[in-house]
Each structure stands twice: as C-alpha cells, then as structure tokens.
Image (cartoon, rainbow, N blue to C red; front, side, top):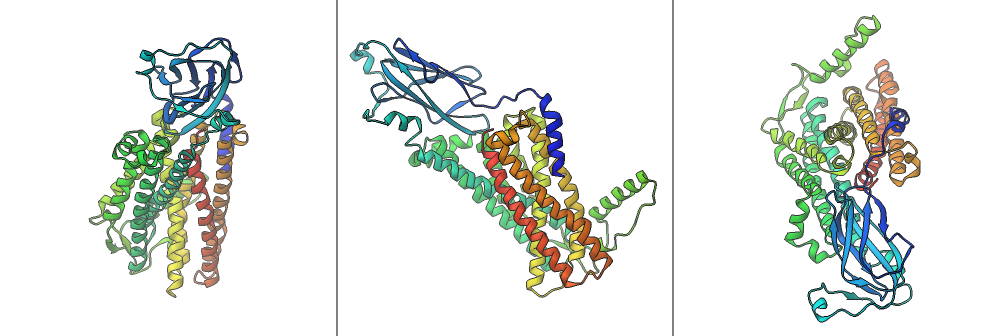
Length: 494
C-alpha cells in the first residue's frame, strides 16, 4: 500500500509548480558583501509570508553593540525592512532573525556583511533620547560568530522541544482516543468487561490530549516570547498564543479531550441481534466485488458475527464523546501544513480524512492488543479470530484512506520527488512511509494468512491466538514510531 504514495509522487510531482514554502530568500546587503557607505536600512526577503517571532530581528553592529531595529513589513509579509535611528558605521555587521510562517513553524537564520565607510558623526541629544535602548556587547574575539550562531537562544530551542513533545502526546492520544471510540462502537462485540476496558482507554486518551495541549501551549508561548520563561507564562503571552491559528488548534484539541473524558459513558446493549453496520458494509463490498467478477457473492460471515450474549457499547448519554472526537479532528484544520500548502479547503479536508483513517487503524490495533492482553491476563478465552476478523474489515478501509490521503498531502507539500531524499523533511517522510509499509505488511500477514488459517483450523488453538497477539503487538510498536515521526513532520518547516 505504501507503494501507492511513491508511484503518485513520481507521476505527479514533476508537473507541479513550486509551492510557496516560507524560507529565507535574500538580503540587501547580501551575505558576505561589502558596502561603502553607512546604512540606515537592511532588507530581508522571504519566499513566503513571515512574521517576527521570538527575538525577531537583531543586529550586531561593527562596534559590537546589539541593535534592535524597527522592522517594517510589506503587505504580504515576504519583505521586511529593518530601519535604524542611527546609521550602521564601519565594521562587520551581523543580522540574526527569527520568524514564523502562517502555520506557526519557527524559522531562524543569520547573515553578515561589511560596512567600509568613514566615521559616522555622533548622534545629537535629540536623536539619542527618543531612540530605543541598545545593549552593549564587549567586542571580544568570536563574539560575531557566537551572535550569528544564535548563542543565547537556548530557551527558544527548549520551547521548540517542549512543543514537539506536547504535539507528540496530542497526536498519539488523538489517534488512540478516536480509534478506541470507533472500535467500541463498531468492532467490539464481547463481554461487558471488555467494553468497559475500551471506554476506560477513551477517557484516558482524552486526558492525555488535554495534557499534550497544555505542554504544547507552554512550548509555543516560550517560542513566541523569545525564550523568556517569565514572559511565556504571563496571561498576556498565553492569550496572544491562543489568538493564532496554532492556538485555535490547541484550544479545539483541549476541548475535545475534555469531552472525551466527561462524555464517554458506559452504555451496554445486546449485540447478538439487530443490524451490524460493519457486517452490512462487508457484505455490500463482497457482493460488489463478486458481481464484478461474475461470481456469486459469499454469505460466509459466521466468524464475524457476535456470540450469543455478547454486548456492545452504545453512546447512551455519551453523545458528547463524538462531539469531542469531531473537535479533535477539527483541530487539524488550523494547524501544520494545512494552513499554508495547496488549496486550503482541499488540504484541510484531506488532512482530516488522513487523521481520521489513521485513528481507526492506530487506535484500533492498540485496542485489539489491549483487549487480547486483558483476556490473557484474566485467563479467559481469547476469541482472537472473532475480534481480529471484525477489526480487519475496518483496518482495510482505514489503510486505504491513510495511503490515498497521505499521498495527496505529500503531493501538496513536496515540490519534487528528489526532496524525499535530499531534504530533512523529505527524509523524515520517507522514514515514516517505511514504517507504515512495515505496519501494513504485518497487518496484511494477519489478514491474508493468519486469519484464514485460523478459520481453516481450530480457531480456539491458543497458539494461533498467541501468534496473532504477538504480530499485532509488533504492529502497534511500529505505529508508535510512525506517531513520533508524524509529530516531527507536522512541527517542522519544509
């Protein structure tokens, strides 16, 4: 299934125009050049819209004095002019900048140039008094290199790491929470204890979503405040961060997590009879495939049907849990590359489909493993065939959704196929695709080999159940690595 992504990239990307990713384009004066007159302005150009973040624009003049210019942006935010109350005199000048793209990805860099001019007349009292204060830096050897390398911005780096951790927690908890909700509603037909176990995990995932949102908010505020913990924890800084598109995404996920915790109540109903949406969907698909092949549709779904006395979860009084799941998915409309890449509506809807399908797969496999382990610990009959056969139906649909939507998102973000191996973002994406391929292969082994073997032989053989549980556990671990890589991709500039 992962080959779909590579084939689509190879066929479509060469025909696409370059996407407008935000990055450094040029400066005036350019890096490494020499100018022969004092400067009152420095121009910095970006390839896409940018907004000062953190320290913004900082200049170290030829005397080793740190200057805070007044940045004036163009209408589209791609060109920023740095203006100084006092012209930059002779010496080597360093410029360090930190901006963020519309999707809140922080981007930083630096450049330097030489001003070779005569001495500049000292400013008058009238010129000095209204000017912004400057910070003196002793012009010691190596101070320019340290300035350009961003020495002193360790707290900003810490903020980025904190935000990445919060993002990873939030993504993992979202996938498990939404996936467990779908698993409980459509897949699980078992005893009351199993249903309560899965509902418990929905609530726990909701609490972790809230935790991830708080951690990410702290990291994001620290970045926006330039690495100052005092400023980052002030109410004003938190409100400013929540006022951005990233802040809206964080707020939606926090609200969704709360609703999962308080809204997912245990409601049980008899599952031995009545309509079964999962089986009905399988029968319709099987009938369509059979008609396309000119064969009779197979009605053999005995191993998919619940055993007598089985119960299922019903959202009786717990409709808020589904609202919470919707809010979690809606958060991806305002975060990451959805905000900046491609047609906004198409990218946003594709991103939501991608996360929803991934939730059914990742959260479902996590619950499959958890329920089987619970039964094993309690010495109960595993019932592995029934559980795995039902989940394989949902997992197959989810895997197709993940592959197709993932391919479309990659087409939107990447400019050329070569970026899959030539850029850090592309290499991370390639690693994610490789892990997804491994997880899909493990799922395919269960679906195409192990489950049919259990059907043909003794389904209650404990060896079959043990093997299924082992393969599913390895698949869950591989998908955990996918979640971590996804958090890095979402938070990284392309």
